[in-house]
Length: 280
Length: 121
Image (cartoon, rainbow over all chains, first blue to last red; front, side, top):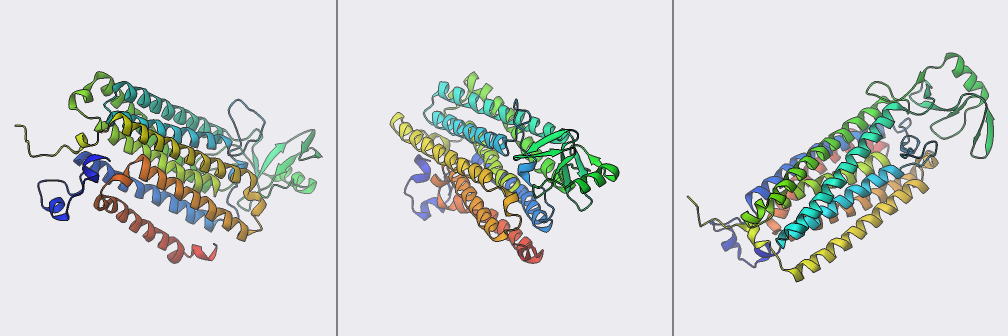
């Protein structure tokens, strides 16, 4: 920050008492300390995910085969694009938040109100997207998948009639294996007779592969989503206080800065979730 | 009783219109950087599908390291510019970063050495 934190002071002046050696207010420091502990929780989750992902490397589901849906575009496969959109929304709402903080430093009430409102809006869009993503994942694909018995699943692309896949026309049951080949007639006939069909995902079963994958998905995105929900609510409450002109009276908008730290942290966590859950 | 010996640090954070213009310029610059990095990541995700590299671990490892590198760059911009940590005093900066980094290394040590995950990487 401009001001106190950049002022040239000797260490004797800084640490000699009667002032914060960090030139930072109590509330902001405590927010940072809370964020460290929260960051450690997420680090724990993500390192557990990393470990399991490597441990089950041979059967771990491939994200592009799971998150290929896009709202309003049925039956088109657009892998990762909607998650990318969600990431972008969160980054933009982080930008509007930092602009709200900047407006606060100029005591620009109108600016803070506008940017904070857009931040709340961005957060709400993200939450809605996540709810949609969850319901799509829980519901599963159109036909479900066969349990192949080796920890992987064969997604059923077609049950009857002709089916065209990557330039080749198939007849009857067509399943997609983990390495994206189409199963031969013998295997599908056997599966049709004795196979078990799993549809959708929950904490016990997962049509896309390892149930552990679904567990991690619900846990990590759920824990992050809970943070987004509380972040949106807190931002909204602060927005009401800004509108009432409370901070005009206090003489500074530090409250916006503090909730801003929390909001940026949510974006920061999502950046890592995006990489470690969806990309890697 | 109102104390007059307490410094209100938040009051010093105010800046003028001209400084605001400069700050906003930086914010927009970082926005573009973050968007471009995200775009690169998503493009990589679509072009280098994981299924293509199931039998080619060495190439996939390189792509993985590239993803992690890009993510760390993004994280650094968010922490240092958006969260203003780059503008705080050195002491508080390290009080915030050092304990976290210490525990991060501790966890990585567990995963890589103790759990034997390195044999797969």
